[in-house]
Image (cartoon, rainbow, N blue to C red; front, side, top):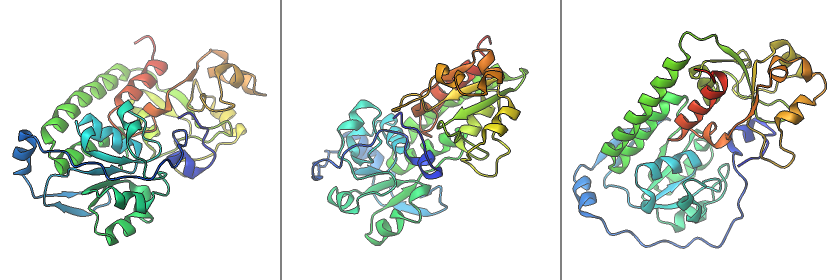
Length: 314
C-alpha cells in the first residue's frame, strides 16, 4: 500500500494497492479441532458487545472466519488464528500468509456471494460496513462482529474483543499486555518534552488526519501537536495558506510510495514551502502508512516510529 488518498472515503479505505478479483472462491476444508480447541470450545457460548454496540452470541468457537478489513486480519493472525481465516478483503497483505487467502472483494464493497461460498461462522466487519454490508450479512444469518477502534489504546480493547469471540482470550491478554507496556514507554519518553507541531500528509493535495482520527491520537501520544487538530472533520483537506500559517516542525509523508509519490526532496521543491520550519530543518520524513493507518497489532510499531521522528534524541 502506497497509494495517495484522494478523497475522504479513500483516506479511510484505500490503504493498499488494489488486487484483482481473482479466481472464484472455493470453500476451504474445515480444520480439525485440536485438543486445546476442544477445551476452549467448552467456554462457549459467549456473548460480546461489538464496537457498534450490538450484542452477539456465539454458540460455538468460530472455525471459519472472514475478515473485511486488513486491520482485523492482522488481529486474527496475531492471535494465532491464521488457519481459521478463510477469506479476507483485497487489502489484507500482512502477515505474508494473509496474501494467500481467498479475496472477498474490496473493503468498501465486499462480494456477498464470495463470502457466502466460504461458509463462515464469523465475519469481522468495521464501522464502514454498518450501513452497507452489515444488513445483508445479518439478513443471510451470518454472525458478524463490528471491530473499529477509535484510538491507539482502543486497539487493545479490540484485540481482547476478538480474543473473547474466538476462544483466544489468553493470547489476547498476553499480546495486549506487551503492547500496553510499549505504549506507556512512548508516553514516558515524550513526557516533559515540548510538543512538536506535526503535519501528517496523506496526499499531495494536503489531505490529512484531523480531530478524532486514529492518526491524530498517535501523534498526540508520540509527543506531537497535530496542526489539523482544529479542523472540522476527521479527514480534512488543508489549504496551503493554512499549512504555512501553522508552520509544522515535522512533516510525515504517508504518500511517498505511490505512483508520483512524494519525498522530502519533492516537498522541499514545492513553491513557498522553503519557509516552513520542517523543510528548513530537514525534518520531512517518509513513514510506512501500514503502521499508522491500520488499527491493529502493529500500531505500536507505528507509534514508536512517529515518536522517533518527533523526539529523535530522547
